[in-house]
Length: 329
Length: 260
Image (tube, rainbow over all chains, first blue to last red; front, side, top):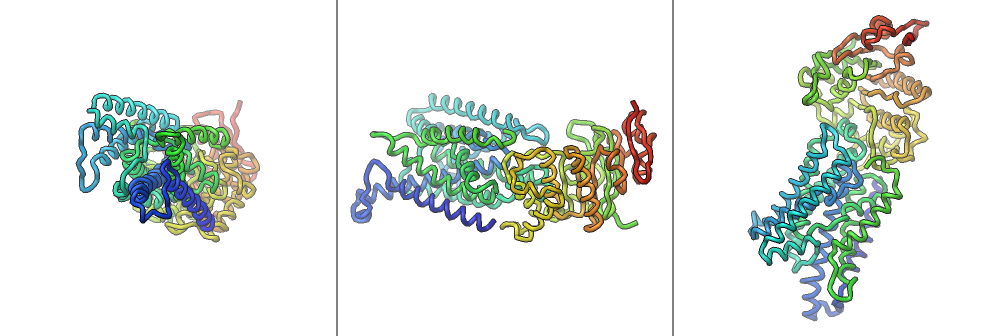
């Protein structure tokens, strides 16, 4: 098992390194890497724009994929992800409220938009869970339906806010409704990482429990998993991670859905491999998608959310058709 | 009489917003014993088993393991002592059977890190004991109800518990596997001093093989004793609320049937 984990991590690290290299090179503006340090233009382009954007993509992709994998295990639902559970929508609503009201302050160094987005994500996640839970059972169909509806409602609310907000805020809101990794300088990525890296580690630390939960909730409890505590922890961690990524990059869909499935196809179902694997492959997937978004059109660029949707949606439907062994969804 | 391994004292349980499902039930589980829990549908059998497994908290009364209340046990340590096999498990992801069984080693394995070769050997052994060795590499989502049940039983055996709680494990099993299950349980009782509490409707077939039978009626303890004491027409007629239940002893077996 340890050998399998090492092999998986080695392969996925290579994939990640290659994807990162491609993403750093790809772009409309050619960067002359031989004169990177001597040429001020290349330097600015690379260190202020290209590199931060790739780092942002890595961070967001890793976060979305690892939360997707965790949520799928927690709810024993292969279709669960931040998007289909309404968590992204809740985060987007929270963030747009903060932007529209012009709350650009920081609380203990953390941008208030992050906090608002986190709160929105937590509220949406709790609402969806409360609706889907009947007694001791979470109904898979109800979970997804309520998630999708919460997403639609929050989207409508964001649109409403966008219409009544002042033009400046309105543009800002529009920017991440589409989902973009545009960022200037590495410090915003650093601020995200301070919040995100601990959530990754915490989720990875829960991978054994999540593995047992993915098999069955009752037997997980009799195997020593404190189901209630684990559920609350995963929920809070995922809301935090999704809240922060949504506040920075907008609601980018399908990464949390498609990446864990790809990892499972390659390395099996064990969450102790799927979680770290999703972290690596999610990062690789999003920077590649973003590289494509930056270079696909002859002029201008596509929103990365459109690319992940266009790639992820059909791939997921294909998976769904191929893998009929999923017992219940 | 030896010291009871597990004890329930005046257990009460009511589902939220529902009627009381268990009323004043006391019982004790001896080391190395096979106990059957019988009763009609809705009599509280599954609730009782879930209380004993620590999955439900009693609204009054207590469950003791080695004289210590279940709630006071560390979940991980408790999981080394008690294993539970539910009526059915709904595994959505296509885990391999061997990996599901291996997860039964969790309470024994280090907190972070994977199961050892020894754990793997125990998992294989448990699959064999459950008569499911041939299913090892199959994905659990592709198994039939009975096969899945055998895998989950193997997982519980891999926990190497002292108490095994089974919620109607035989319901999805064919005749051969029911017999095999009873033989395995009896063997583990004799070799490993395993105690089994098992819900069964299978009085006809396996009733006499248990050391003790406990009968529930409307959440209350209707009777408990040795099979020959419980498997009697008048008592069963009352437990199942059907006057046409008949029994007859043939050798050391009791045959149970219902008159037309």
